Amino acid sequence: MAFSDTVRHSYQTDIEGIRAAGLFKEERYIHSPQASGIEVEFPVGSPPRKCINICANNYLGLSSHPEVIAAAHAGLDSRGYGMSSVRFICGTQDIHRELEKRLTEFLGTEDTLLFPSCMDANAGFFEACLTEKDVMIADRLVHASIVDGMRLCKAMQDTFKHSDMGHLEEKLQEHQDKRFRMVITDGVFSMDGDTAKLDAMVALAEKYNAMVFLDDSHPPASLAKPAEARTSIVAYSARST
Amino acid sequence: MDEIGKAVRDYIIREYVPEGDDREITETTPLISSGLVDSFSMVSLLRFLEKKYAIHIPDADATPEAFDTIERIVVLVRRFQKAEVGSV
Image (cartoon, rainbow over all chains, first blue to last red; front, side, top):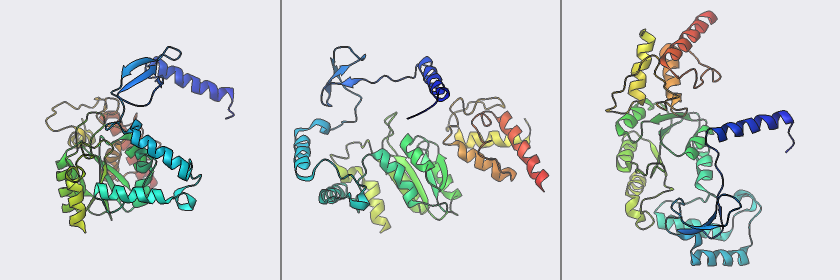
């Protein structure tokens, strides 16, 4: 990237301000597979030290599971490293569709569309599904990636006090003039670990003819009991068909 | 506090203050810089002001600084009320 000294100086000043505020994040280099026990080089240049890792989202230890690694090796050998294409041009393989079908069965949904990450899904979902005739009503503590995705969408934005079903109901009443209403929530809120009041939320959505968008990145035991953990959404889906 | 200030305060208490929280909201209470209202939820306050006072506040003027206290919000509302009258 070519930039002038003026631009460089401006960015360096910003970085110095971030450092001075104690907000500059130094990366920690992990010299081992992701696991509950890892070897970490920190500060940079120091010998790696063994640490207990309690800050990954590796809840079931799948990041380095031998079966996952073996499957990845098999996939590399049979299908190559990547498609060098977006999905809809020539980037969809049979194994994408097989995975989507298996996830659909596992999660009890109508269908599944894969994204590289939940952040990418949140960025792409709202603008694909809603227009300026609609409204998005989000819990105030939804993940930042949802906020970014909402900002990309032309639908009206509104929020309700965190987990306050009374306030949500007021918003749903207020926006009855919109074409579609979409209530947006995390399943488990990533900062404090509290869970959404899904049953109450779905009941309100039914009452006021609204959809519910659930970011379930941190599901509480849902991988062990998917049907029970998703009772509200599955039930909502069933009642709406 | 004038009528606009009272209306804004009542809205802020209703819209942003958690139930059971009896904090005092004055004309100079920091709203944005305190975290009570963030840039994400500020949009509903903007919409309330535009609807209640039949004004339009351009994005460039709807800044966290301009919305940080009731005092500043009242100044903003009066400014755009005059602008609306002037355009008639």
